[in-house]
Structures are given as C-alpha cells and as structure tokens.
Image: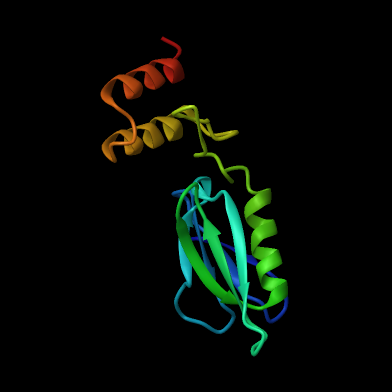
Length: 138
C-alpha cells in the first residue's frame, strides 16, 4: 500500500511506493498521471497554455522525459517541492560514467540499482564488478 502525501485542499496526492517510485493522482481521479523512480528525477519543466488555467508539469531524468501531468499552478510547485525534498531525489545522476550513490540508501538498495544498470547495458561487466566491490568494501 503506497504512502499518501496530500498536496493541499482540492489538490492531488503523491503516492510513494516502497520500491522507490512515486506517482501523482489528481484530485477526484482514479488513475495516476505518472509514476516514476524518485532517484531518476533530476529536473522539472512546466508548459503553459494561456487559454486554460492548467499547465503540463514534465518530470525529467538526465536525458529523458520520465512523466507528465496536467496540473494547476500551485500543484506543479507542490509536486516539485515534494520531489526535491525527498532523500532519493536525483540519486541516480551519473558523474564521469559512475552512478552517484543515493544518500541514506542501504547497500542492498545500491546493489539492486547497480544490477539494474548492468542489466540495461549502462554498466559493463567490469564497471559493475568494480562498483559492486567498492560498495561491499572489498
């Protein structure tokens, strides 16, 4: 069962899952507008339509759009603030070909992330082995 973070009266809700993902559920809606891995989120952008009061909030990763949601002005600010305050925010940002560890994450969580990156082909066998050894202190 996800942890619910209400964004205010008549606003939507952030649903935070144990697997490190979060989704956005508009007020009165039955389905999420997006669900993203918190550690993959690095930036936000908002596109506005002058004819309507709603905006499109874009959730960005390093080089990709991870998700988007149609929101009002205050909701976009609240969603961004929630993500930026989360300890996992931006934890998968790559620096010089290496994954920066997520603050306060357990070794097992970091190993899972490395395994995922290795499986996706982002890390070579050698890079995976080196980073795994570094995490395990060997």
